[in-house]
Length: 370
Image (cartoon, rainbow, N blue to C red; front, side):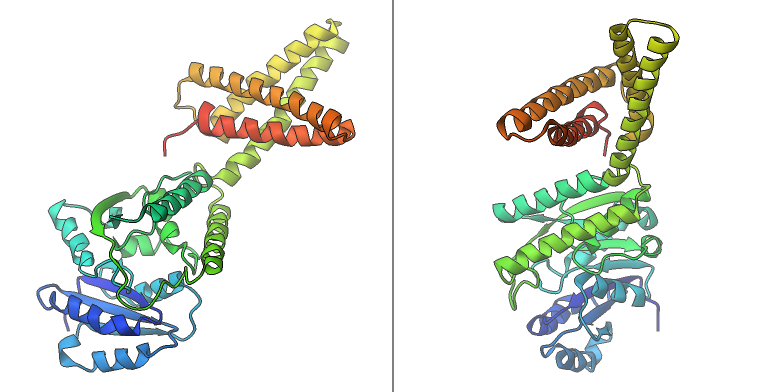
């Protein structure tokens, strides 16, 4: 048997009514296209197993393979299981609910030749069109959170299909088993310096069954929460990646400690060793700490040395001024209005000013290109 050029993976979880329709719609590309269709029975509890067995017994469906996952532990796990079983050099996956037409996989495949793309350096993905506004708000909101936490801009993360090569598959290390799989795949592609190529796809109405992640308001928010947890786990696993929020924040705190050490050491040396007036010593210590903080944050924390130094310095000064004002306002509010003791108020003020300083530095003073 000739080895296929393209492996198409569709995870099926209780998609019994859709399976025959999927195969029928994909069959029209066979044998003109040299591909295999891998249907992953992802722990289904409906009639999917029986339907798959009946369909694969038909001679005209020789392009279909079935991979079985005994117990469903997540959307991502089902996809990964199918991808690992794939025999072709070019891989693709999509949904089995036909909201994203299975024919779009072949559109993505043809883009490789049409645009002369190197599949080992490219991830092709669908960009969903004609979506409801409420869905767009959620999608764009989650994408912005991903950008903040992981430091990479990614558009319509869950758009299908996705097409790439074994080169990218080999780079995946402990990918999420749930709905964050798409995010992880695109993130790793970004870290590898791969091109992300979008093409428009229609996002239709589900013909059969129901959504597997939003069966109720509770399940919807549980899924979103699990997704955000997975994004945090991706950030921890890729702590050393550029733009990683966790790495930047820990470095920012370390830089703050260094700044205060320089500030105080300069103040003490001028005051006690050189006999300089305490006010001048204090101002000089502050300026010394400020310069060190600017340089270390620019070079190390936010890795923004390529930016314009003068503008960054001015913005960093403004951010620090706002942070200082917030510190004063916070300690006065919690001491005089809330009636906390000053020591507790100061701890709250430090937390507030630190968050303001970090946010302003990351997203304004040392903003880096995604």
